[in-house]
Length: 126
Image 1 (cartoon, helix red, strand yellow):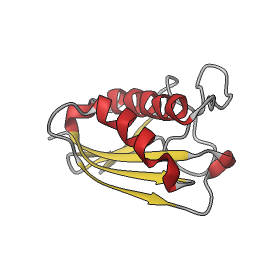
Image 2: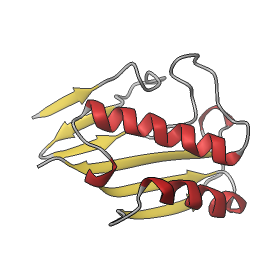
Image 3: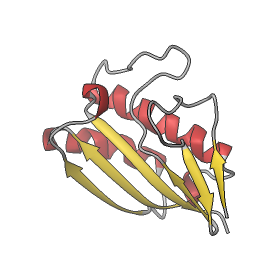
Image 4: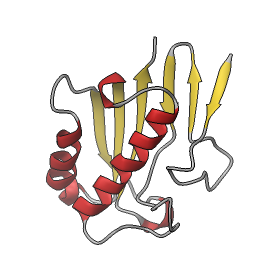
């Protein structure tokens, strides 16, 4: 059985997907980008600001599913350019101060709406 997770505190899905799915004791988030849920505008002043917005969106989705960053067991980070890696990594690390999850970080040819970073997570609920 699966449960659809939604929250107005994160951007609404812009396609045929859910913000997150809870199933089998895990919460699977869809990738989040730097859309401000209050305005619907991208928050891309710089890569650090963009990454903080992504992490804030993920926090809202995790919270709606009954989780938070300590519950995260796996993340995937997609970047438009590996030149952003150090900054994205530093911002990301500020949300995982102990026992960080497994993860990969990859450069991709393009991301939705021309953003520079998209992150998805898997959290353990059980």
